[in-house]
Length: 548
Ligand SMILES: Cc1cc2nc3c(=O)[nH]c(=O)nc-3n(C[C@H](O)[C@H](O)[C@H](O)COP(=O)(O)OP(=O)(O)OC[C@H]3O[C@@H](n4cnc5c(N)ncnc54)[C@H](O)[C@@H]3O)c2cc1C
Image 1 (cartoon, rainbow, N blue to C red):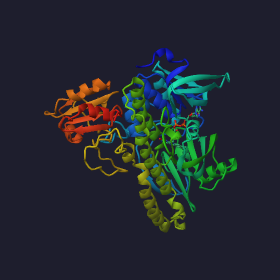
Image 2 (cartoon, rainbow, N blue to C red):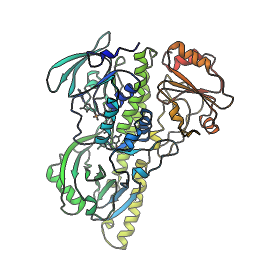
Image 3 (cartoon, rainbow, N blue to C red):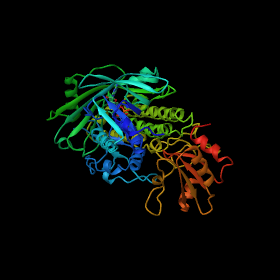
Image 4 (cartoon, helix red, strand yellow):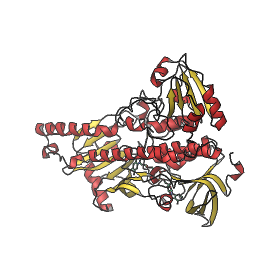
């Protein structure tokens, strides 16, 4: 039974979420959208000193579409016509070595596998969109300047001590479940004694956000999103067009050696990149360590879970970090709803870490591989001729530049990661005996094999198949001779599992899904598929709700 709404704002909440970065906001939004009361606390006031993420991946955009906020992201103020080229240069006053052209986001087409496309929307534009979404739900209690200082699990739930930053006063709140979306230094993870495995320091990097009114006029390389600077020592700097107008983020890439870049180093780097002094204002400096770490488990095996950077830390190369975290939130969201509403089997919440951890390992590994590719110029150093004028220099630049351009492509084309993650080995997925297709990187072949994201296809009425998946399970009956699904529906009703049947006779969809009956989960992944009804419909429902 759902807890009463009076609990909101009070001393009990069904779900306490700690940390309102993009992942905590996404989880609160997902729960709010599901009608589940929850409390989201954030120790800061929500302002973002230095925006980190800026690519909202295609799967995250599919979630935004489900939540009804895809238009809000599309309408974010990053200019739609700002070219998104990645440009490799010896300097802005030097030579262009190569370029990967991308149109402004308004001109990018949706890939055939999705009704959405990725969007360039930096964190100081994206977090407010998620905040606005969260605030549409009166049953979600969003409290800024409120810090988690302690918590303990009891027989009945979790008791947490919170402290208001303004009053300094501590107070207690109880919750049925606690989720730590409290970032890389997660206190929730630490208190649960969850270790992290991997490499704790790939590089010591300094990011500088600066304002420059006419940066594009300082050079002849044309507008682009990302400039990668290659000197005699290899790749040493990147500059990205952070808001598509007057704000840029420079990253002194650094190395595994701990170097603290001073303001003089920063100004020297800017001068070297542009080739001369120019007018700019430094807005913020962030010294950070690039890590390759995944938590050894995603919760304490009971009522406490972690998600987002609390669970995985990766190089930003690839733009996977937040997007992986929002996938965590969506996977956990429907399972928490099931637990709160009382239809979850005992294994359902355990399946969260089982499903999500391998995805993080894959993405973290690829992010590091992308870093190695970006820094491969430090191994294969540029020949001195690429810095020289003349025909010999042109030939050397063409040769080196085309090698680097080709090398970098794997980072720019990543649909196989954003859409192709699967839960093949999950205990709540029913295998259908078909062979697992290979995992792809820059391409993605849609599959309706159990564990995969249910494929997108356009329907005659202009909707996507993804629009058919609601807050509960969806049983697709595909083709003119699909078996009746009433037995599955009845079994779901007995177990209290929300399930809707959708009959479709669209040959392209039947071909894509390959079976006449397909059961999609509340997160849009395929749980089961077959051409005939199962012998034991109750057993099927118990399997997918984690009750066997
Ligand atoms: C330079 C850079 C570029 C990046 N680009 C991309 C990109 O393009 N795409 C992408 O997907 N990812 C990108 N990332 C990664 C992405 O920014 C992170 O993965 C993402 O911010 C993680 O979100 P989160 O909500 O898990 O954690 P955070 O954003 O770290 O949020 C955690 C929040 O928890 C709060 N908190 C911590 N402890 C407590 C407490 N005890 N009580 C209350 N509140 C607490 C913190 O104040 C913080 O607001 C990039 C990262 C960097 C460094």
